Image (cartoon, rainbow, N blue to C red; front, side, top):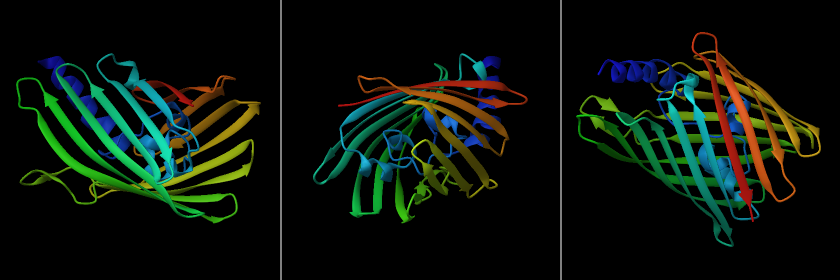
Length: 268
């Protein structure tokens, strides 16, 4: 029982603080740039801002995993599939965090499309479950919505809102609601800058920022930072000739240590 309480304490004090107690930013690409992911337009958008899925040209799947602070009981896994059609892009995402005695899961059905040439919108309907040993499993439903717009050449602005309806958990408790707003600036084909602000109704603003640089063909290096709590991050990404993309990353908290992550995606 002490182990369960310790894990829940670590989870609530640091994991939720890092994410503002809301959505789980998933994927090694996101982690490598300080989780500044609201401007992504690849498969990683399925976890971070569904509006980015409108730019997909091929169907594909993605998987992601990380281990919070190198603790075996703080594992996180995610997966997703997206399929672009003439009517827009349809997708499915799943996420799991925790261990046998305490875990959270999320299943999302999403849809994205271009409203205009440089304006995209995405929405996802979520089913969330929280399971604590010796207690009932709780199930909740909510949704999230995202928007992306290229305001000027090479500058993509993104907005993402999670749980705008303030879904009630108990009489005086609600699922976290967050809004994220930021931008991705493509300085060149080899250099990208990401920045965003995140706000939960009950937490301070969080700043996230990162840089991606293509060191050699199809090989990317990433660095990033985020606040509340302050954490530094770095990562690598490589696109194989067969279309498989592999991403590795880790962020570092000065008190709790490293959180390594791995992601793989394939379009076909």
